Image (cartoon, rainbow, N blue to C red):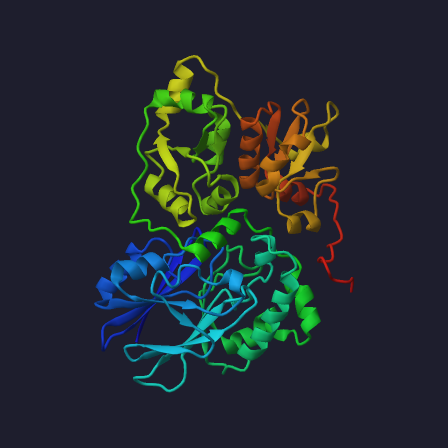
Length: 484
């Protein structure tokens, strides 16, 4: 048996190729849209992809299962568990074999057994992997978003992301029961999860790529909770806000992802086209680092730096219903990387891109550039003039753990939808934990006509490290729970 792990750092997402060297057959589990990587790996390992499956209907990326199966002629296998509204709508059309709890199939001499593990989603499956050429018991469980290293999958996404109200408490109870069943597995069973640290599908994921049942039994908080109601309370508390694009991903992956057919970098636009785009209120995303954007940018553009968080914030802030444009430094930034990051979450409407010569042309035409001024923590603390509005764009858990007194909490993902609550006449200082999210928030404000916007140097981390006053909120009791 051969195993190859694929990890996308922008999504913190893992997929697997499991093959039988004797027969040359291979299975891919949880592929994303970049199907070329699996085809390359199969050629390198001298196997053919004969089976494709996934653990559940994903919320954080567009699945590549349908396209990979069609491209290779492989058998597509999908879950038939869960409630009718969240079954695969395209399964029959795609000729998929539907799997239920206990079903198994062979990939050469490798046996794959489906185990229904509801909780993160109603239809979720994990896969027990047995190399029958040399063993009679499974070596590993591909756990998807059920069990991670150090955590378990969050059960609130169907309610918080997809809008199916009243489901998260029942889902948490299902997750608890799935976990009790899983805990009976032997200590040596390896755990190959679907995500690592950085994913929004849990709250405490480890960067360690794999684990064992025995290790998780000792060190994973969820394995230690024996009471169902206590587990429900703990697993729902402190979950991060799910990005808005998760709702689109659930729908796309349920109804049938479109075929991407590879990706081509967007076409280059002439520098003099930028004014016309902005005049038509087109969304232009400046991919440069925050410091470069702050030093000088074209008014009306927004800054989403091309870094490890690019996919997440693009998913939060870029609409799926309109064309958008990119602006990048072609000498230092990988445009194809940006195009792939967007395509992996279904943002396919990149209509073109501009180089930094567009910024130069803007200035050469006598148009002023805009900057994002920096305010020090000392200047903010000692302000004796017009008091600025301090906007904290961090997540809810960060805010509750401590915030600057009198600050206004407007999480970055929700900021664009709440601009009507703010006065354009008041000076504003935006901050996050260290500065990255604040840069994006400041660019959003400026793009919408706020002219007195600054960013707090060092963010809340610097404020707290200097011993300045901090307010802390009591952690709220999750909806439907009672205080303990």
